[in-house]
Image 1 (tube, rainbow, N blue to C red):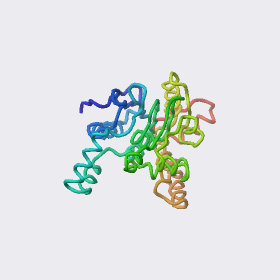
Image 2: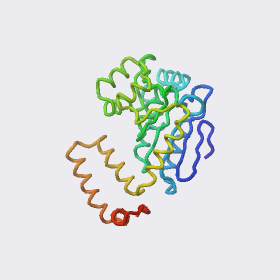
Image 3: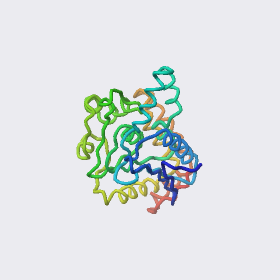
Image 4: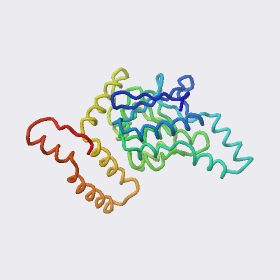
Length: 265
């Protein structure tokens, strides 16, 4: 599939999806939604890849939904009912797909990550942003609410009170506050963003591909499991690690004081 609103690049085990509508701050559109679905599915099924990076073209990550798309949904709702809008949304891209693919996903945020841009970043496993980055859920200012998972993910990341503040006021937060609140892993100068992402990707790629997948799956159990059932599933997965070649290679390398050669088996 060819893309017009995004760019998909694969190099040295790293896939990069770039939102590519810089003239409109990379606004999220119907076309971008379908292209993102296809690109993430492609990346998730490509066993040669180890990490996925999401970034924006120009000086912004993604500054929310295209206003024309929102207006079209209002028209559809008036003519066919809100149920038709829900039907359309059920076939849209969901940040949940980023949590479900086996690769760790890094959001490289420069400039605005507002609305759906913030929600896509929240669906990533890591968020590295620049000093000029900002995050916002401004939907309330348009007389609507969040629809890409922010009401569920934000409280899990920054706590209920801060999530309420962002979602009910629509007020953006800067990079310093995002770091203080635990929303991002690291804040860097704009010129250092690519290098910071590359360092994180390299660190992950030095580990067992299979164990990275299993570890991601276990951490994400917190999204839909209670504490005790999550711990039990983690323990089961931990026991399974000892049946893998990578566990044998990892312990052997430690004892022999050499770098492990993990194969994902």
